[in-house]
Image (cartoon, rainbow over all chains, first blue to last red; front, side, top):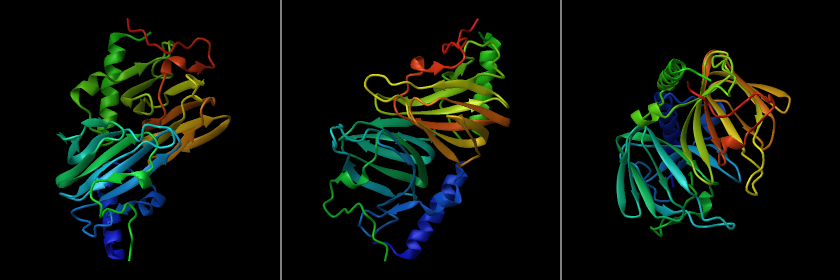
Length: 159
Length: 159
């Protein structure tokens, strides 16, 4: 659970970080920034801000924004609807992100990218200045993500 | 056909425009910027610079860069391999682009986007300051594009 204040602060932080990266948003997009605490109620340590540009039945594109040191918990994107599951390319835009994929650790700096195969366990954490990461992928179905930590709930409760 | 000088100038222009938009490239990417004159030998009027970030058998992401007033000739992305053809989302990052889709005309400014259905005729032209456009799409097969102008050749000859 996150508070209304945490939601507003996180949306404002994400919009600022995107602007600092040169990424222009519409007003509607600024208000549509999703804040995920993964049900862990420690947003600054475990969480993620997301802006979905497009998600069709064929492809998806998002921006991911992380607070300094914030991590997205380990998960995988399982097969669904006869597809092998979501395949995704992370491209670091600003800051630094450490990506752990199938036991391998990589550091992505601005201009560096990595493609995560479907159904493969991964997690990622921003460096000390936070991070902005563009995600290009096949269709996104966040509700199907399988997390290693059984306490994770993908939907964020604001209260 | 374009000259070696035109190729070098166009790559340098594209890299500069991307940098001005806050988009960081690796050295390898700067050298991999594709310059397309569509076989029309009037690059500044008809053409496009492209940087492909990723193109898997499921999705694709590119940056498109245009000179001031430069236009990409009318074309469509036909069905292939049992798919309905490439579906693509254009998101304007810098400058301004006028997009013509199925007879409808739209102006996209930074932060604005539009999704072009598969197999639908479209063309686009940059405004007076050029344009940088992010393209998110299903798999890209440029070699299959069908152009309205029979003089177009998708592969660029440098000589």
